[in-house]
Amino acid sequence: MTPTGSTLPRRMLARQLRMLREKSGVSAEFARDAIGVGKQTLWRMETGQPVRLNPLFIERLCQVYGAGDDVIRMMLGLTEEAGRTGWWHAYGDAIPKHFDLFLGLEAAAKRIVTYQIALLPGLLQTVEYRRAMTWVDTPLMPTVEIERRMSVFAHRKVRLTGVDNLIAIDAVLDECLLRRAIGGPAVMADQLAHLASMSELPNVSVRVVPQSAQAYIGLSVGPFVILEFPRHPTAHLTEPPVVYIQGHTGALYLEKAEEVRQYQQIHVDLQRSALDEADSRSLIVEIAKEYAT
Image 1 (cartoon, helix red, strand yellow):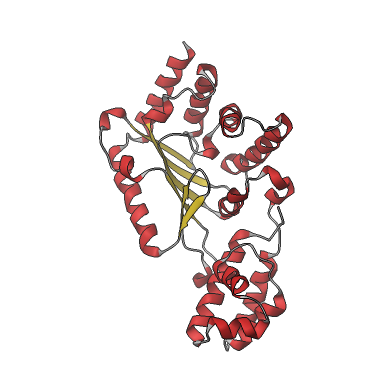
Image 2: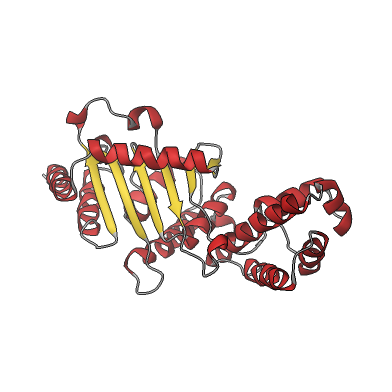
């Protein structure tokens, strides 16, 4: 995997480049010609895709778009930030290619809202639960590579309990996933005890939709994650939320404001079907005891 910089600054820069070009009325073809790049490269620059960012290109585009000196300085500052590689790049091929973007967004997020129906959210999993699923996904992977992935996983989880850069997670879970013994009863008993413990943290909310809820909106929508980002000192640079939907062969990222709003409303509706935090914790503990017996 070739490091291509920090995800959030790259996306912020992309959004500003696109807005500046559209506001100036400059065509994409003219912009490409101004810096001597192809259609694909400019598209990557304007959509925040992994791409090498040349400060000279950014400065030239800003000049072509008629941006003032203050804006150019801001854009070059974002370019510098975007050039810093994230911690996960040190793990190289231990990161699945399609998961690199998600890790970058997760590392930058201040809050994660998630609904899951089959597996527990990654940040709330134990290592043994995670290892059991990794063996299923990649049964021929050497043990040493599995353990490298576990190291990445452990690094991600630090933000739930660390002192700096704490992340909040708001999880709504279907009771069915609590009753699937991933890794066997002993692993699942430990997993649910861990989940109950984590749910007591002030930055973690876990709510369970009980089987008694029968039909509810989550069954037709499916699992999703909403990533929310911290406010930037310059208000218009604040990155809007992104919806992440994982698939077997890749992932879908929804960024349009209306699409994000729909999923935010779905989350509100899911909460109406879920038990409150205290009752959810009691149910989790009860199921954990069933595995332990």
